[in-house]
Image 1 (cartoon, rainbow, N blue to C red):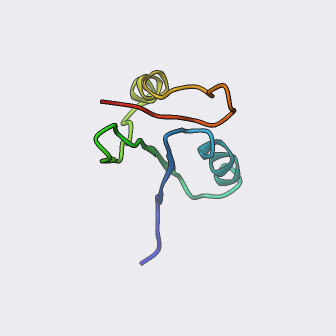
Image 2: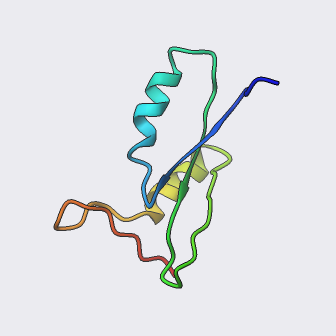
Image 3: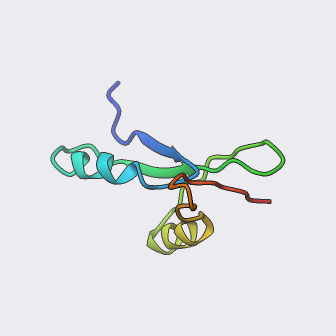
Length: 76
C-alpha cells in the first residue's frame, strides 16, 4: 500500500514545513501539515489544522523567533 498523504510536523514551529511543502508541489503527494508543540508541563501534542483558518490559528499560537534566533515554545 502506497502512502497517499504523509503527515509532516515540525517541533514548536511550522518553519521547516515550508521546504517540504515546496518539494511536494513538484509531486503528486499531498502533505498533511502539522506541528508538535512542547508544553510547559513537559508534554507535547500533535496539532494538524483541518483548513486554512485552522492553519492561521496555529500560526498565531506558535511563538516567533526569540532574541537568540531560536524558537521557544512555552504553551500552557
